[in-house]
Amino acid sequence: MKITQVRLALLTAPLRVPFRTALREVSKVEDIVVELHTSESIVGRGEAPPTAAVTGETIGSISSAILEHIGPALVGKNVEHLDNLLAAIDRSIVGNSSAKAAVEIAVWDLYAQSCGLPLYRLLGGGINHLETDITISVNDPETMAKDTEDAVRKGYSTLKIKVGENPSLDLERLSAVRKAAPDAVIRIDANQAWKPRQAVQILENMQAEGLNIELVEQPVKARDIEGLEFVTANSPVPVMADESMFSPQDALTVMQRHAADFVNIKLMKCGGISNALRIAAAAEIYGVECMIGCMLEAKVSVTAAVHLACAKNIITRVDLDGPALCSADPVAGGAIFSGKRIELTEASGLGIDGISGLRYLN
Image (tube, rainbow, N blue to C red):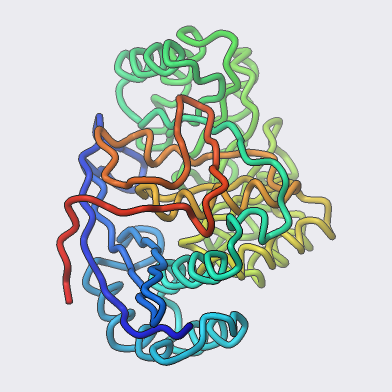
């Protein structure tokens, strides 16, 4: 079975409420969908969100990278030669991690379909379900409390709270959230908003107020590894690296320096499933537990992340709420989202049957 054509389309899905962090505000998911067509009429699918504030990529750059570089490197190649396909993606262009991830996901989807297996089983997994947290966007304390109450009513027991837009308000925000959800597990994400000593002070104040924070994600600037290391050594709250860690090499640096207690694997940051597997392998060696996370993504790429998480025990925390934040789901098949529970079917590959409302770009 050979890859015969690469097609791109734009997937759009409005969010239930605007998604706000210390870095950006978004009102809809608008992602690039990749379709790899084959000589056997089997289609593999992948997806990439434009997240310029994190990966530096836009819809235009993702499309150009795939149509001009990554896609041509795959056309005519055999699906069964997985390692050759993955190597071709990697050397086709420098950087462009989300574009590479989208095509990689489609390749893995094709390969698993050719083997007649769901991807998580191909990767060695045996459990087909997991539970995700839900994100509460940064807002005024009253709005965040209302959003928290809504999440608890829907059955979510773990909340990821965005902070850092105005550090002076963070304690008040978290107090309102904790009051609205006294029994929930609360993790916070500062999205690089704080300076190292400021982060330690804020976290000490939060714990002194009895807020019982599980972990803090990326408290300092992405490239400030020394600052991240300082916070990890001095914070009363465990620290997770996110934007500081794109590649497996970044992951090794963080783990070897103990610059964080946990690491967050995102397919769009590391360039796809193969690098995610390398990061997970390093984490197993160093004994560093991982979270599986996502950007603002619809169900195609998030389904791929679910398959990966179900295959790797070192992934102990799940932040795959992208589809749950959307007001509509245009994807038929794939992972089944029911509140905090996400379940995979036994369909081969990613199990995606089709996507409605796509606008094709080529």
